[in-house]
Length: 320
Image (cartoon, rainbow, N blue to C red; front, side, top):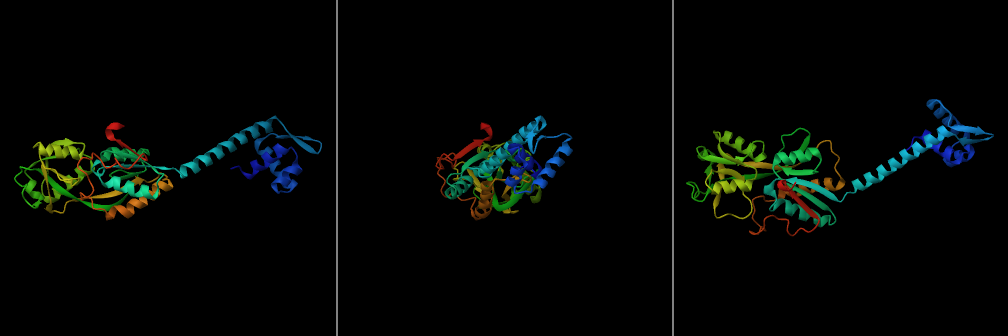
């Protein structure tokens, strides 16, 4: 987009005739001449040679015209690129691994029915990595617990109940529910410090009146369940997928144990219309979902993406 002064110069330079240029611009010839004269004064040298009643572009004028044409072409390319970017057909979403079995596949499937040509790039990993990706612009949105990171916006959407995960032969395994304080003397297995679920675990135990004795730490909730089964301790985690025959999910009656799940995005980052539309879809649909339901999850499925088609690309922490 050229300024009027440069636009007038280009018209005069191309026609090398002030009257014709003024007519093309729907401008009076004296007004065009004054604009060219002012530009020459600002540059400190003439752009045209006066030949009789006409004008001819001189070497300085040719240099300026070449640069203006280049700048104009760059601007037009930028406008086309931004137009294409605004109409982008892909959305990048990060999420905690516990959401990859049913939650994210159902949300992606539902939105894909509304936008069948949309490409999803899905990134699964622990919360510190997801927040880093969000800040770096690698993902547009992130479905997670509240980030403890500056520069991000977060909208809470739903509470997810947390259960005490104990092995089948544990002294409390046959109970219908327990109080969290009953685990005060138990060894715990937990995610590493800084992970969202670890922050929730520490806070809930403090609220119950004790500090958890962390025996082993891991990166993924699935590995914590394996450590529980192997006898290294107990943990708190959401109930997910089908029930296992090797551990028990015990409801906790006191205190109320849950984590808040929401959607986050970078404050200053421009979001494409498709990303904004998916964010609105999450805000509408996620609060109505039952995060603890086993409905529709087949035991043999490693994740819930096998039937979503080629428009879904998934990347885990280890694949990047």
